[in-house]
Amino acid sequence: MISPKNIQLIGTEIAILWEDGKESYFSAPVLRAASPSASAQGEKDIFGQQYGGEFGKDHSDVTIDGWKMIGSYAVRFEFSDGHKTGLYSYDYLRELDKRLREDQSDKE
Figure 1: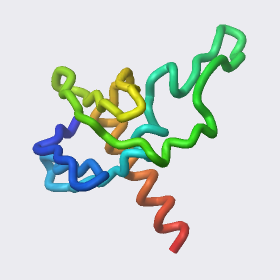
Figure 2 (figure 1 turned 90 degrees about the vertical axis):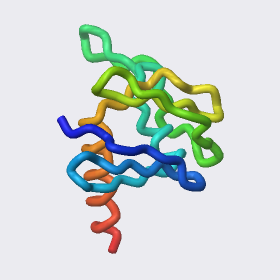
Figure 3 (figure 1 turned 120 degrees about the vertical axis):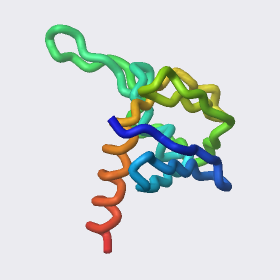
């Protein structure tokens, strides 16, 4: 697992410098929409039935108020809408960055 070397809020984006020198940039609305928490993603019962979640919710006005490192594996972001339960593992953030870059290159 590759850990963040530095995390900074630059305007409305979170910038992460990773130990391997790679840089990731996430806008607050994108991070909020991608929250891995059960309240945001919903949960499935043993039959595969989906309950809850925030699919389609507009997070365009959300900002990041702060963050906290959780152990040596995750970051918990605090958002202006009060959401602060998602634990963004380092691996999850790296994968999210990869998906966003692929989506961007598909649009170009």
